[in-house]
Amino acid sequence: MAHILIIDDDAPTRQLLRDFLEGQGHHIVEAENGKVGIEIHRSDPAEVIITDIFMPEKNGLRVIRELQREDPAIKIIAISGGGDLGNLNPLILAEEVGIEHTLTKPFHMQDLLDAIQDLLLET
Image 1 (tube, one colour):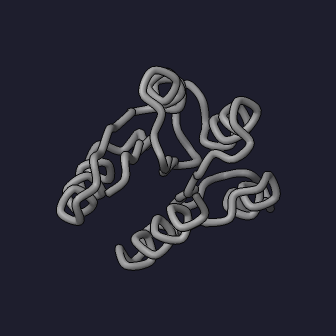
Image 2: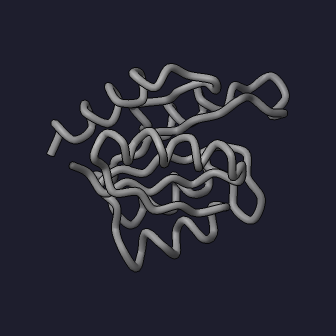
């Protein structure tokens, strides 16, 4: 299965995703913010990255842009429960910078699995 990095500042969300995805046979690594997530990915590149948008240290949009500069073919799923960007939807912004798969929290785990599978088939 896949090596997946989950970047989310919410520990219960990370744990829920970890438990579910490990149950599906994936190898999971976690990061509590974008800065740590980038460091982890640089030292142990993941096949798929799942990143929240609103986080301390470095938000998900900055994570996406930085990682895309390093690897334009990187496979990222953006997730968000909403937040304050004025009239802008953060997931639409993620799509505008090239993220094909976005999920609004709470989402169905099958939707996450489908997104992961779709990204893995692109390789």
